[in-house]
Amino acid sequence: MIGGIFIQMEDELASSIAIQGAVWAGAKALTVTSGPGFSLMMEHIGYAAMTETPCVFVNVQRGGPSTGLPTLPAQADMMQARWGSHGDYGVIALCPNSPQECFDLTITGFNLAEEFRVPVMMMLDECVGHMTEKVVIPEAEKIEITPRRFTKLPPEEFRPFEPQADLVPDMVRAGDGYRFHITGLTHDERGYPNMSVDTQDRTIRRLLQKLEPLANGRALCETEHLEDAEVVVVSYGITSRVAQRAIELARERGIRAGKFRLVSAWPFPERRIRELAGRVKAFVVPELNLGQMVHEVERAAQGRAAAIPVSHAGGGVHQPAAILKAIVEAAR
Amino acid sequence: MNEATIGKTTLEIPVEIPADAVNPVEPFLRMDRMPHIWCAGCGIGTTVNCFTRALIASKRNLDKVAVVSGIGCTGRVAGYARLDSFHTTHGRAIPFATGLKLANPELDVVVYSGDGDLFAIGGNHFIHAARRNMDLKVICVNNLTYAMTGGQTAPTTPGGVISATAPYGVFEPAFNLVALAEAAGASYVARWTTYHVKQLSRAMEEVLNRKGFCFIEVLSPCPTLYQRRNKMGDGLDAMKYYKQASKIRHGARASECDLTRDGEIVVGKFVDRQRPDYLELLRSQMTETLGERYAEPEVSCCSEC
Image (cartoon, rainbow over the protein chains, first blue to last red):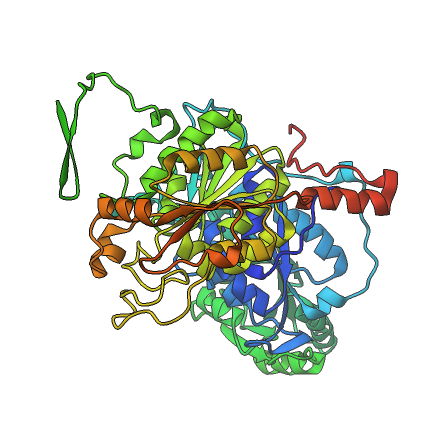
């Protein structure tokens, strides 16, 4: 028994806001979906961003658009995870590539959600979602948990959206006598609607700025052979496991291929890619879409290294040979 | 002698109001947000007044009362109520409230929203929360239109009226909210108007001390859009209409509660039935299946909770 409450809501619009109600009552909460359901959740990803509600959305990506390919893999929701709700805001997206990581990174996701008070997307794909592998579940007391940072101020001094030194405001929960107000409207530090240009600028910039530590120094990536790499394969999710084989095959042929796996895809680890761009020939970016994260790689590389897509419309995964071919051509 | 103006009517108030007089509802409002956005003659403020009186009379612990609103004129109630209050997205107040209630069953969760919010975009959530008998008190201020956005046709707009999106008259049938709530499974269903302030306060008090999915529809005037466009006068004219056309018929059949442009308004308490609520059902199912292995869910988020 792990405790907690499970409820099957009537639709994804409902589940994606019910979790936020639960969070404001003091719980940690997540919701899970695939493809079209993720589209329906966009409204409340925006609400979570605006109200700085820490919560987790799991999207097991399938082929799209629309109903697309139920139960078949794709990675074509990566840009939607970042930009899908209207307006400017920031999110965190993590891309596990194994059942073990689904466990571990979900904990990381919850911890990051609490630390930064943002919605966190767990961007699985159908392969990882349906995969069967050994999973080691540590004893509960050995799992590191980031507790919610509740305010220590009394109600009369507390302002719900007063940013602390890390630009993240302290939280409260319903029922504790704070009589606080939360709105999806642009709001001031009191949480009251405020439509001024100044408030909009201050509030929305902070929603992005607070994520900067994660965008750079603290980005989660898994790297290999970067020291001498001339071609770096940037990949994530199931594609990173295919890429692993392609990199090995390239190395066997004497091509100095390196691995850069995006574990946290958003915020994008821009600085790390830019640094690499100065000393490698090219990035090869295989993904189960027709080009999404490759554009980020290209943008971060700023023309100092080529960003070569290895696209696949989804429904299956790449063959290692397809990625190898791109590596070979890039190294030429 | 003081004077007050309502529409074209000037009322004389035959008492001196002391300079230090405090409105008894003030402690329940965020006075630092006044003035509110509602128009002169609008009924939403009247319902809030009734709500604050119900809060007092109910003797509930106000630290444990949460108000959840959607979007629209009535959606702003959450912003003015000095309680834990949540202004959510359009139509989604009920699922937000569901999460709030499940994570902390000690909370009295009131959903306070308008007819457009609860029954157009939010209609699906309403019927499912009623079906589950989620322990929520849903107050719907029904002004028969989308008021905040300019008076468009809502699912409650009666046939024949002119709206921003029906310049030649509304011809689609409207929802009968009483029938909808009863059919979906609500434990308690009542309808009043903003003329019936005593009855409305008592109904609100009653549901605050009652478990299960409770629904109160409050017919409320929108002089600025609905009435102006249909040449129905001002807020006071609406009160006169409510007074003259309302028939109190407790226990009336839901099918007799249709609203029309200017016909009879059946008001009263129509449904008051005991059904186990969602959390009771969850508990009994789990206890039956798991026996002693079932423990009440603890939904705390850290070791300090």
